[in-house]
Image (cartoon, rainbow, N blue to C red; front, side, top):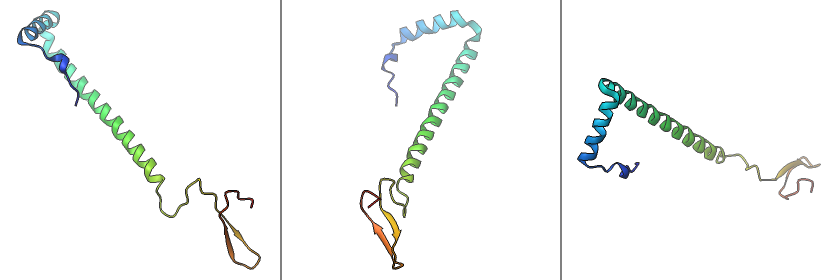
Length: 97
């Protein structure tokens, strides 16, 4: 979790901050605090959504690379039909061989 060490204020500092906030916002202080709380909640939801999307993308990318039965894209094997109706597998790195 986020460390808020810079908010390690004593009671006198919090009192001064409260008095300044009361002078600035007056009777609207509860509305301002409520709006700030909603903004923080929405921000956290947005961050959580971005994290989930990122994790899903990473999971899908790793799952796509591990599908069973498929050859990796770097595999250069080719299958060709021979004249005697058999199947040959060419495992050379150059498919022209």
